[in-house]
Amino acid sequence: MEPAGRVLSIAITTGEPAGVGPELTVAALAQAAERWPGVTFSVLADRDLMTERAGASAWLSGSALIEIEHHALSVPAKAGTLDAANGRYVLGLLDTAIDGAMSGRFDAIVTAPLQKSTINDAGVPFTGHTEYLAERTHTPRVVMMLAGSGERPLRVALATTHLPLKDVSAALTVDGIVDTLDIIHRDLKAMFGLPQPRILVTGLNPHAGENGYLGREEIDVITPALVRAREMGIDAPGPYPADTLFQPRYLKDADCVLAMFHDQGLPVLKYATFGEGINVTLGLPIIRTSVDHGTALDLAGTGRADAGSLIAAIDTAVAMARHRRAA
Image (cartoon, rainbow, N blue to C red):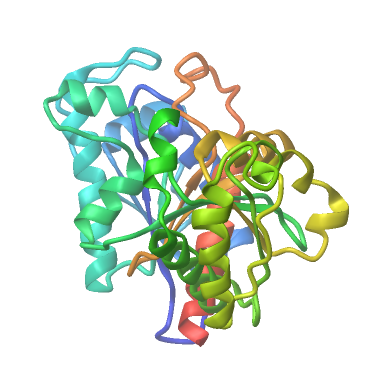
């Protein structure tokens, strides 16, 4: 329980209305009183949509710590069927959450999955949650990190995010990798309570370049970045071949792995944790966590979607907010 006058407030954006976000929010918050006592939740959504997906109008009864902040859909939403007319509605939920977190109204935001194509089809260029959060908070560099659960969870952060593979090498710079490691180091200390995080760093090429035979990025960019990072007091060994790094004997003493590109690290993470993993955006002035899956249009409205990832995302948001408050 939070101390008197210091109750945490968490905003939940319910994401794409045709997807599983609304019903997963209902399922997750059914555990709110028991799992997160003393924490208040603001569900940003269309109230009628939430009632429909809950299957009963009284899903909030008896829980004064949960409220729906009503945002009207542009057009009625049908489970499993996308409609670009609701693209700006989805973006509006995210804007409200960001503004509330920046003003101090919310201690953290948790985002259910959205559909990038719907927002783009509504006429708004949109790459993803991570990039949009960086732009709206005027943050020059953010880091995408996915994580599992447990006493020592597997965490994988990315040096580059949503880039074509052909553009990754050019996007890797010494300064960029150093800045990324600094963000991971600082946020793992401040919001995860890790006094001296150990961050294992992959190479880019097969066998980490094999001494330049399979590529020079390790020699020219990654290794110089790690030398500089260690001079700053960051525990960042590497670069390691990515095909052998993800083994218990290496990971047992690691707090995070920094992978060079999206599909280098995330397939391993998602294989190990899917359904219970989460996405965290590091480097922001606000706390943001999310699920590790998409809108699952085929499951929307069926009652078969698993809320485990959203529950884990809320768990982490609450824990991060408490660590930040105590720091």
